[in-house]
Amino acid sequence: RLIGMIQPREPFDSEHDPPLYPTGCAGRITAFAETDDGRFLITLTGVCRFRITAELAPLDGYRRVVADWSPFPGDREGEEEASFDRERLLRALALYWRKNRIAADWDRIKAVAHERLVTSAAMISPFAPREKQALLEAPDLGERARLLLALLEMAALEPTIIRPEARN
Image (cartoon, rainbow, N blue to C red; front, side, top):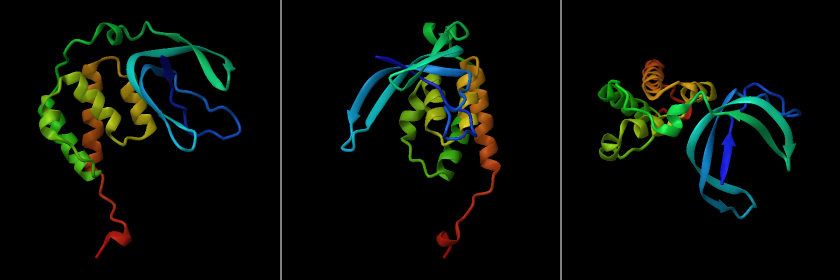
């Protein structure tokens, strides 16, 4: 019940398989449901990141790769608690989510462990694909937290665009 997820690089044309980023993540399928139109909604729980060492021939329409798990030993062994400014991260996250109209249960968020906070915030936040990839490729939790904080603070400096139809 494991599946690897790898983000395509952009831009790409729709006539060819898109080139892939070199790092992906294996996830365990923890839930799935079939929609009325025949699609599947799959929930994955991340297990371990990997680097692509080679791409194999497709099988049943799915791309396949040879994965190297060794660059990410902390994923399998559990990362040590990282030192980062948690309060600063929470303030930046609150500002960013408010700006992007993302609702949150802040009492629960404040109570979660460092790793869960950083990983969940990185997944939920509507960053561009390149930014999400940079977060995935960060070598450890501390570096991922620092990068997340930088992305949140940079986004806070961007002006909010008010669409003409939203003005009164």
